[in-house]
Structure formats: C-alpha cells, structure tokens
Image (cartoon, rainbow, N blue to C red; front, side, top):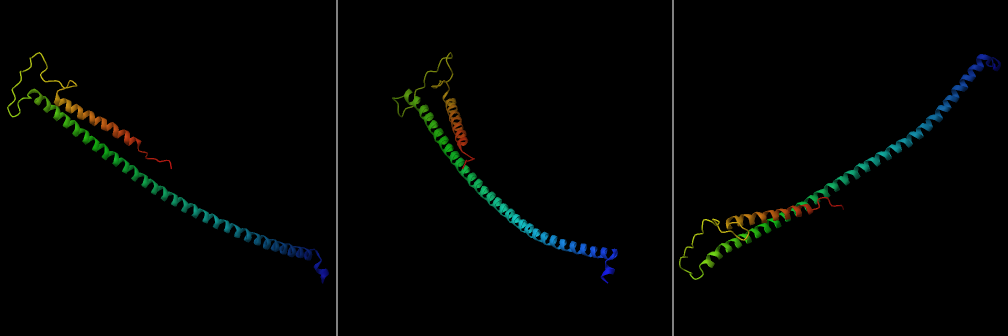
Length: 177
C-alpha cells in the first residue's frame, strides 16, 4: 500500500499536502506577528491621540491666559490714559482760569492807576490819542488786551496738547513681561 503512494502522483500529493501545511504554519506565524504589531500600533495611536489632546488643551489654556493678560493690559492702558486725560484737563482748566484772572486783573489795574485819587467819583475821560498812533493800546507783547487773552489761551491749549501727546505716547501698551 505504501508502494502505491510512492508513485509520482502520491509523491506529488504528499509534497502538496506538506507545502500547504507549511504555508498554514507560516500564515499562523505571520498572523501572530501582525496581531502583535497591530496591538503596538494601536497603543502608539492611543498615545498620539492622548498627546494631541494634551497639546490642544495646553494651547487653549495658553490662549485663555493670553486673552486674560491682553484684557488686563488693555484695562491698565485705559486707566493710565484716563488718568492722563483727567490730569491734562484739570491742568488746562487751572491754567486758563489763572490766565483769565490775570487778564482781568491787568484790565482793572490801568483803570485804577489812571485815576488813583477818585474812589467813588466818575473817572475823568482821558485825552484821545492822536491819529498818528495806534488806535488801541498795545499790551506787553504788542497785542491789544482782548487779543492777548485769546493768544494766551491758545498758547496754553497748545502747550497742554503737547504735554498730553507726550504723556499718551509714554504709555507702554505692549509690556515685555
């Protein structure tokens, strides 16, 4: 019986059966290797997903922190600018009031100096100026007193504007900390 199997067809059948068996064994080994590798790929994938979630959470936290810092900085800058505006406005009003008071005092001084002896009496009219001289008396800077006050007010306004611009420019809106 074994002799019958040893003919060329039997040997071919045995070889085919042995080859298929070896292929099945090789396939089982390959399947086990791929399962093991698949498990490591799955673990790597989960680690990367966890790292991505951590990165996204950190980025969101950093963005929230930056937003809060920007908001605090904007409030600080706004408060500094408001303080500068108030201080400048107060200084401006005080300087204008002082200039107006000085102008009023200077207007009254020539009238009292022209007629020092009469306190309750009507002042004696002065002699009109000749037509060769100026129509109005010039002040210290060569302007009539009404124009002198306006020029002083404008000078104060420009000076306060310059101070305001410099103070506003000195506010650091981008701190480096």
